[in-house]
Image 1 (tube, rainbow, N blue to C red):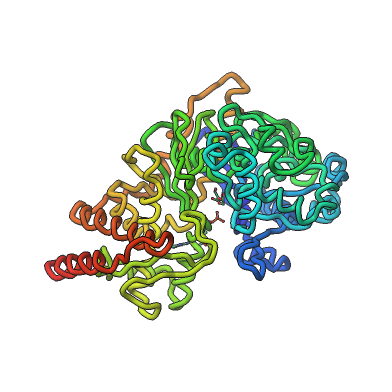
Image 2 (spheres, rainbow, N blue to C red):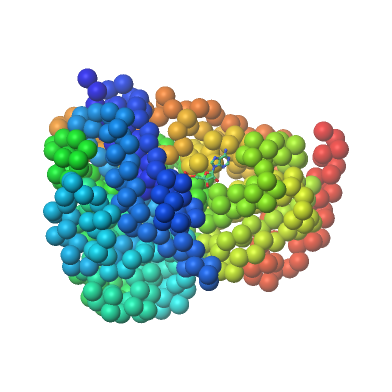
Length: 546
Ligand code: ADP
Ligand code: XUL
């Protein structure tokens, strides 16, 4: 007898569904709607609209709803047994906000299955588009909130993170300042995760502690809305926010629109949705100390499970709630897959050719170093994008391919030092984690084994696992987290890549050089050329010996 759980992931570039059978521990279905390709009438690029200023980045909530209808329609056409799904949870790109007017609640309570979601919901928004995590247009608001709350250390202590441009609080403040009338007409502000959950539930869904921590509005110690942070952000905001709940909370049952239209059982339980990174924490099996994950999706992230609250007072990292009820650390790099694609497209390469160039170039890249800010960067903060090349130019494909991949992992290693503990193993996920040659560079730079999985969407998988965990608890068959994740994940391991010990020192030295380059360009530190020449000579001697 199958025991089916559905995990959904509303990510930057697409909406994904994964159905897991917890009886056989198998993933039995995977579906995806890609916004650019399958819903091209919305004219998004990589799922978003980048405004002319380069720093305002929005997406379209109606498009996500059309994607949900299309996804379920495709599943139903393939005769997926929707009526046997026991519980559903979900994941969404973090921080993005959805602004609803006073018709929203009523509309989602009375959805007509003979029509579609996008037509019925079209006039329920008080802001047509949603700022998403790629937006970096709120520096002014970040500064204002930070000052009102007594400086960045206080904000970190209160909310787990410094104020960040993409976080929901500064974004809400910008909307209130720029469009005060529309702000007044806003009855409810949802995160993308709670917005999508609301549609399935037929009423406004709560925000979970994992995604709520990415707003600069939730107190990281008490997991409650923080009145000071709310007042520093915008007037009357408290009334516009849904309640907060634990990530494992069962929030209700699926609404008739979906049972009548797609054949879900009316008993299907809904579990609170969360952000893609908290979901991925579960989806790659990080439920104990010492393991970290690298996710190479649209953004590159580095995250780990934390038993105790540990804050980054340098202000670059974040602490979110983990779905286990503990904490997780996270650092987010905007120049992830889309930056790698810039180099790939510039030289008209396939991913296979890109990988071959990594294989044919030496570790250390003969002393050539890149600072890869193709887009405004989050960590380190770079608002005016520019790519810096030390020792080479933009014309050589081989050097550029190795330079971007080494730069991304060196930066990740450099900026994750605050997490303290050295990871004993890295679990990899995200679209680019299928690329073994890219992941080998990660193993070498971190000098740690890297575990790659058959499945790259750990956010949707994590959501399905969370749905199962809450379901079993509700029927008194509680399973602990390692039990529920490991039984499934051990069957999904594709390969473990081991670091090449012979280049451990080379990369340790390159990390120091990378730090000097970053320091020089971003903070006016000394010119790194002398150190780079010394490193280059070492590389050349080493390469000649091989
Ligand atoms: P998100 O969840 O943020 O929407 P994904 O995790 O699906 O993104 O990752 C999508 C990215 O994966 C694409 O932008 C693409 O650059 C990258 N990708 C896909 N296949 C490969 C590959 N073989 N090598 C490197 N990158 C890849
Ligand atoms: C995390 C972040 C991104 C988004 C999109 O803080 O901004 O990882 O969640 O994936």
